[in-house]
Image (cartoon, helix red, strand yellow):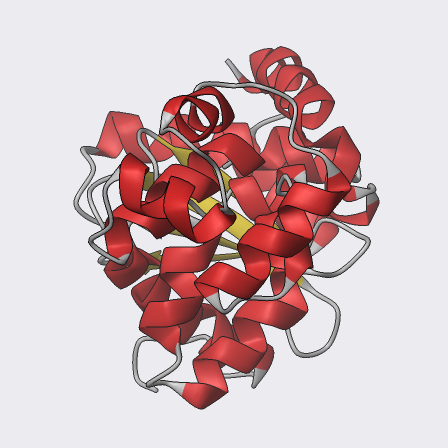
Length: 86
Length: 134
């Protein structure tokens, strides 16, 4: 499955924005409960794609529904999951 | 930011030396403050005493939850956002939620100005403005 396939299937929105240079991207929930991935437009195409796959790892792991105490576990899981798209 | 780091941050923000803070705490020397800032366990009694001295809520001196840590320096963020009440409300909603609300892919700790920019984007997303035309 490609990234594009998964985005379409799960109706995930991607937004490019000029973020601070310290942030590659982030994901959150939108007004209607949809998931939105925000990617730093200052990144190269390759880095943007890597950031999208990382955020998709979070989405596939349902991390936005996890408890706050589990953030570090979520990061580890997202790193493992992004390999699916590479 | 843990309690020890917060004590140092608030002391420096107030422009006090360790000796001056020690005196405010009723300690004979600055050694006690040095220990508190360098990782010693801080008792509930000391937290309450320090909160009164710094003029903050005792809860603000306790270790930040992981979700708050994700956003950088919580105290500095709240102070900076106090002049942006709507964004402060959003910040508190996002960081004090029992669930993860935002997951970052970061390279370094966020500064308060970065937090404001991110919050303004999240605010638009939450309000349903997600295209560049908005």
